[in-house]
Length: 195
Length: 301
Image (cartoon, rainbow over all chains, first blue to last red; front, side, top):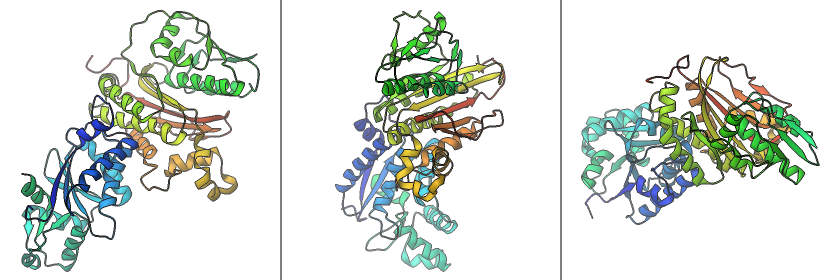
């Protein structure tokens, strides 16, 4: 056990696509391909512990279409982070380029979802449909990396922001460490678990 | 013998005349006379294939295709793989087309789309070829190669997911001297499936009552993203294609049954909705993308 109570799972999309289709390139296109890739991710996650942090790597993927993004991103989040219920897995979309962002954001908006993405050019950001409060509180934690329960009232004096923090935990956008109750930014958790 | 005269210039604006003539052929033999064909674009090519396939199905025997007299046109039909596909639906006089060097303006030869792997193959091919045409011929930034691949992927999936029948896709750049004085990229997709009205009827016809028809089915799918699936994630493809085509100031139209619906840019006068056309059981998607700049000169040539 790594001390965080969560298992890291690295998902190499290029390898998963190559396993599904005989293609020159690793293109995430077509709904059947997306469905097959999503099932392969689910299979990998089934082998992890009760809770997993899954880092889905887009960096070697060239083309992502809307149908495939709907299967690989939106339906995956809906499965592990059902609205109104506690999340069963945390996700970071890694190596996301501007060209990937358009279909990913479109499908997240369609399903009213939010996800954490690490863009190729910069740090992690929220994509999809975060509220203003979501973005503010998430960014604040992202900058600090972690927040202990005792620090929360001083750091987030506004009650709305504290409620937002809990909402981010429920939606899998912030990790709460079992035992200590510390709030961890997913980027910080990823670095701690995967280097 | 029903004789269907193929116009000398067969493109998206004239291909309907072929379907009108086909509607008259209910039995017996049929001849498609393409002897005087001088110009054909992807919409004309996949339209002619579709018309041949439909008549073969209806008449129970393949119609005859009289091939173009002009050697250049015949060579082009061979090179863009029209003849290879046409042999499945037409009887043809065996004439060996003159070898013509491959043109850099053909982005995608007529490609059958029946499976998921076909869509991957189309995207692979476009990735290796589209750069030159999109950047040098149309003057688009290099990143549009990916966006263009996404558009093609979504239109091809429309065949597999909704038509549940075979179809074709083709794309080529042309210099439109008279109409626009600029290069245009024409993308055509056609399938012989059940069309939008039938595909959507079980889920949506009831809400429309007597207003349900080819036109209202196209409006529901094209304008409102309606699909036959309950899944919220469905129906995005056409909406996203429309958005991208608008960004490129292009034209997109879908023809199905007896209607055609279109997003029409300022430079074209295609009606936004046409009804009462000759019946076409499947669907045809036509996309025309204009070059950024006027003239025949290509960027960076």
